[in-house]
Image (cartoon, rainbow, N blue to C red; front, side, top):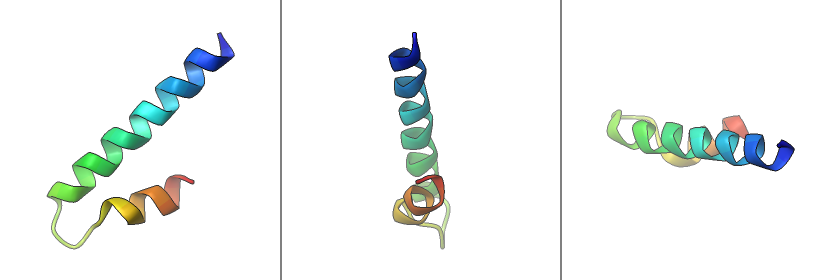
Length: 36
């Protein structure tokens, strides 16, 4: 179960990076840095 929760967290981080690419002035790299 622990491994599945980690993959969900990784997926959420990826979605956040994708959404950030749409917002002007915010890069996916910034979100990656913030989320670790």
